[in-house]
Image 1 (spheres, rainbow, N blue to C red):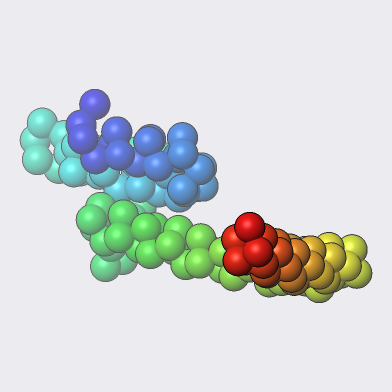
Image 2 (tube, rainbow, N blue to C red):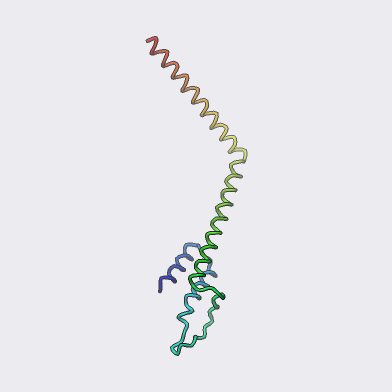
Length: 122
């Protein structure tokens, strides 16, 4: 099994390409090997490579499509996270966290003042 076939199968296993895309890539990779001993193309039932696309171009196209799909998925996740954060319980939790932080700062300052008074009077 050559390196390109392994790459296609690995991309399929990782879910980076679909089965149909993997088939197209594997068919394109198998095309040069589909030449008979007389130098004439052997007949095969494999789907032909789209015009203008060699194996390298197909891999680049698939990788570009995967990259675009990942970008779309990331944008959807960011939008859903933003929507989730806007829901009421999250706003209340953030408000409570802010209140606790301010309260803690006030208590810290009060303790500093008490400590300062004790040192000057002690």
